[in-house]
Image (cartoon, rainbow, N blue to C red; front, side, top):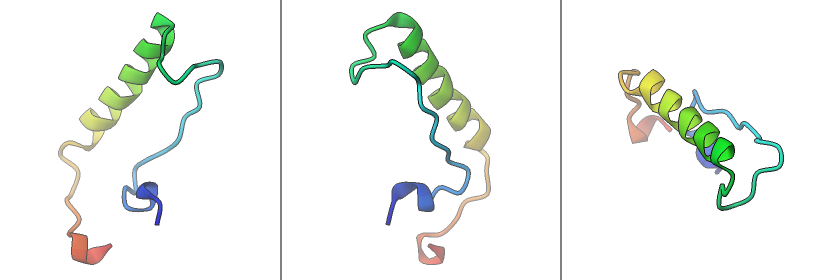
Length: 53
């Protein structure tokens, strides 16, 4: 199974023109902002037991 199937609030956001190393500063900042927002939004989310997957 895909990891996203276990994380109900996940989503995929494509950053056009980005390379795998995020060498452009604006691409790196966008990636960090997306990850940070996800963590902040979900840090207090109800926990799901692995047995419920």
